[in-house]
Image (cartoon, rainbow, N blue to C red; front, top):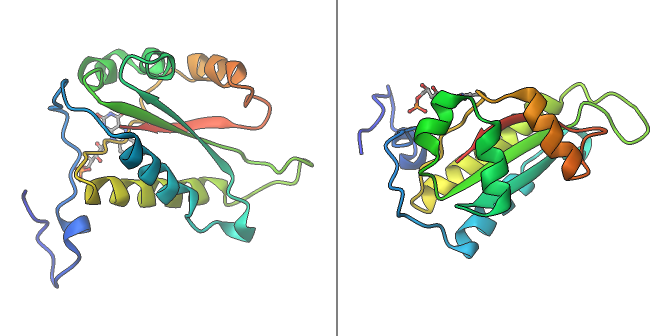
Length: 157
Ligand SMILES: Cc1cc2nc3c(=O)[nH]c(=O)nc-3n(C[C@H](O)[C@H](O)[C@H](O)COP(=O)(O)O)c2cc1C
């Protein structure tokens, strides 16, 4: 793995992380690893500990995976269809009573960063994707009962 060229030594998990698109379509992810990756996101810090995110996971060929794949723009579909799993993060800009959460994107980004590092630690590649069809993603969130407050921010594999 190519190491980032840094002025001082940084942790291997950060220096060696990359986002390749050449995925092995036969590689699988274990339930324990997928759960570990989701837990890493769940335990991220957030302003007032509001945790303004929901994570939607799908494993290759299950219905969540297929729905998430269909939401992606064609270029992202073309290479990410070989992923073992998709994880989508949906963030909410408001609390249940309508109070604005000004930091929600920052909070979601922290959850995404933790998820990325945990996955890399477990030997997986994570490739973030913001290239998806927002209307289709809204339909999926409606189906999952999350539409009222949550917006799909991005996908991860
Ligand atoms: C918010 C975000 C959205 C991204 N969206 C896409 C995407 O839609 N498709 C894609 O192929 N890569 C996407 N990427 C991956 C970036 O292109 C990649 O992280 C960047 O080129 C740096 O490469 P590295 O992750 O290997 O260091 C996205 C990355 C981020 C952080």
